[in-house]
Image (cartoon, rainbow, N blue to C red):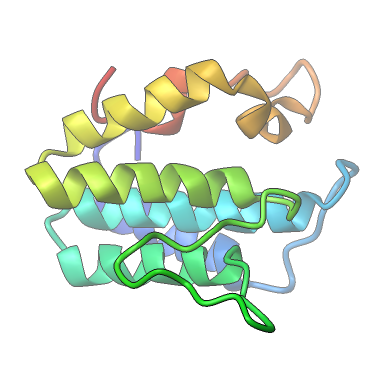
Length: 151
């Protein structure tokens, strides 16, 4: 993604999101966090290529995996965003996807959408702490690293 090869990035992120052969290391619920992150990045890679339908699909799959399903007498309000299960590992990446998608669909601008995500991540650094849990020899992620198309 960093090199601008969004097609290859999309392939790798799709694999990371779905390949059960990829294994966790040590972080609690690491696989759930990283699969959510991979779907988030897949959405970004597809949006960067102008593949709106594919970006929408990645977004929708991520949101579906981290959305509470109302039960009993609770009726969702039509036209409102679904409530995210904030206790579910990886749900912060789904929240970032909603923030990105809301701005992206309103403006069509990946830079503005990423700026909105970065703003959220700066106020909630715990949302991406899992990415910094693999030891000192690995990259350290900041809020700006999460969404590369803006500041």
